[in-house]
Length: 314
Image 1 (cartoon, rainbow, N blue to C red):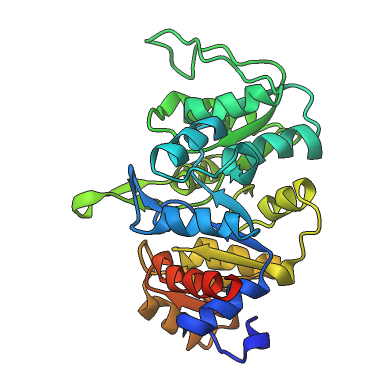
Image 2: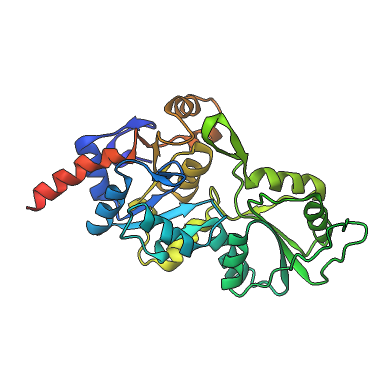
C-alpha cells in the first residue's frame, strides 16, 4: 500500500514523514514480542510511545500470537512494564481469538481437545467452551487410555509439556471428519537469549498435520480472523486507516497485507531489513506480501513525532 505517501516497499521513515503517517491513521495495531518488549523488559521508549498514541486519541490494539497467557495476565504485564493506559479490550491474543472462533463462528457443541498451556485453556473456559480434562494415569498409552466421546474440535497452541500421548490422542480424534482441526498460530519458532530458539505452535501443528493427514485452520496471524475480531469489537474500523507494526515478515507483514493494512517493520525483533529487501526484489509475486511499507529501527523513533505534534497543539 503506502501509495498515498508515494513510497515503495521498505521505506525507512522518520521525522515529518512518520508524523504525517501517524496523523493519517486512526487505528494502530502492535505485535508485542520484539516490538514493545523482549520478555520481561520493555523496549526503550515503547511505553511512552504507546501511552502517547492513546492520549492523542488513537485507537491502539495489540495482536499477538502468544497464546500462553490469558488477556488479564497481559494487562498486568503491560502495567508492570509501564504501559499504564492499556485496557483489557485492546488485547487480541491468538488464544482469545480462538475462543471467539469456537464460540461465535462455529458455535461448537461438544468438547475441545487442547494441546496447549493453561493460559489457552483459561481463555476457552472464560468463553464457556468445555475442554477435555487431562486425567490419564502416568503409565497410560494410546493402546489403553480412554478417549472422550464428544470431542468436536482439536485446538493446538504452544505446549511445553507436549507428550506423545497427547499427539496420539489428537490424531485419533481427527479421524472423525466432523472434528475441527484448529491452530492458534503457525509460528515456527521464537528467539531466546544466547542464540537458542523455542519451537513454536506451528511446529506442533505440523506434526499433527502429518499424523492426521489434515490441514489445520489457523486462527492467529497471518489469518484475517484476528482483524475480523477487532472490527467486530470496535466501531468504524477502516483498513485504510490502520497501521500494523510488527517484527516478523512472515507473520506480521503478511497479516497486514492479507487485511489490506499499511505495514511497518521494526528492527528490534526477528526480521531484518535485508530479508525484507530480498522479498521485495523476488521474482515470486507471493513474496511481495511479506514486504513492509515502512521500516523503523525501533518504535522509539515515534517519539520526536509526538514532540512535534505537542508543539503544534500548544
